[in-house]
Amino acid sequence: EQDLKKMEALWSVTDENSEIYSINHADGMPVEVEDMTADLLQFALTMSRQTDGALDMTLYPVLTAWGFTTGSHQVPSDETLAQKMRLVGYDKVSLSGSTVTLRPGMEIDLGAVAKGYACDIITNNLKANGVTSGIVSLGGNIQVIGKKPDGSDWQISIEHPQNGDSLGMLSAANASVVTSGAYERYFTGEDGKRYGHILDPATGQPAQSGLASVTVVGQEGKLCDALATAFFVMGLEKTQVYLEEHSGIEALIMTEQGEIYLTAGLKDKFTLNQPYQHIPVYALKP
Image 1: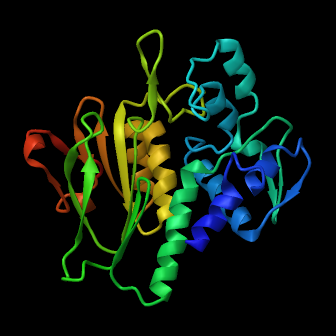
Image 2 (image 1 turned 180 degrees about the vertical axis):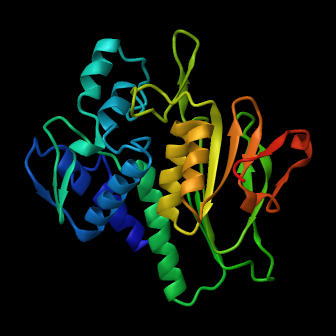
């Protein structure tokens, strides 16, 4: 719990005492951060490069323009959006050792990786203290340590993105499971359209990738967290390419058309619940 409080104190976007707040309000001046923050920033930048910018921590000014940060939702004007998009781009972040420099007006937000990172730290601490069976859950990020005390795999419920009930059960042991989808936070505009909170860094608009939800399973929480967001932005084809090029990651995707795509490693680990057994399931990669 102390770890969590410390991480929140370091990485909160809104807490005026946090390191992220200091970076965001430094007006172009360099800021020294703790090693843990530098480590997380470095990881976020690496993942941005690996996903061709589908994950980008510099989107905060655009999120604010949409009102996702304040809860006062609105569709920004093209002008506002264009202006805010000039501040976006992970390649504009300068990180040298533990010194961070942003251009004036730029703001970063580690929301897409911080929970996964926190889960990793908590899980590693538990293991170091002799825990061989357990489950850690932080809003959409789940890590299971070992198997259940009775020796069977943990059963994790995957939510149906539209209906809010359980789509099916995923069995997992010693793994991180992270789900991302725009169904968690969205608003309906005056035009009657739904706008989800996961934005495409290329456009500054809510991601329109044809996906309803993405679940990523792997060893590291921070990696699964980053990829769940990135895959949601990338869509099915680019996700497939990424999965072919990087091993050790499994994914379960539900499209807006209501189809399910699974990587080979999850084929025998995912069972659809009774009401959803008619849903077609396809292989996500060979």
